[in-house]
Image 1: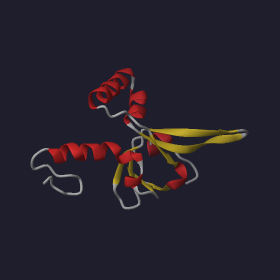
Image 2: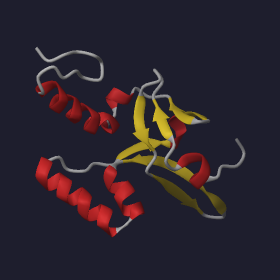
Image 3: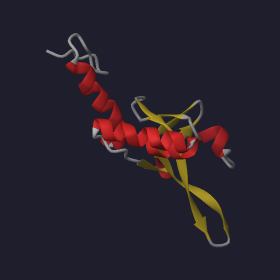
Image 4: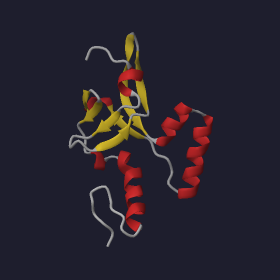
Length: 128
């Protein structure tokens, strides 16, 4: 791909790992500035705090409030752009999603859902 429209082709696009598991959506990007050359995408950013910064002040306050209530601090996952395999309707990465912090909130929610009688985790395992 010779050119890329970051807003149209990358931001808010679903990320999937090499096994096809969803990892969340791209909330932001980091650009690398180089002397005498055009900027290039260095990282894809995933995390509620990144999205909140992009959306506006009220979202930042909501994110901070959620972190205070749940005691889960927002964390930004940085995915090197070098691991991007394909940009199509989804962005396919050459990583295992479970090995990144991108899946942290899903794992937390899995624990909550499994604590509910009859609840099942994403992998279909029910709480005993």
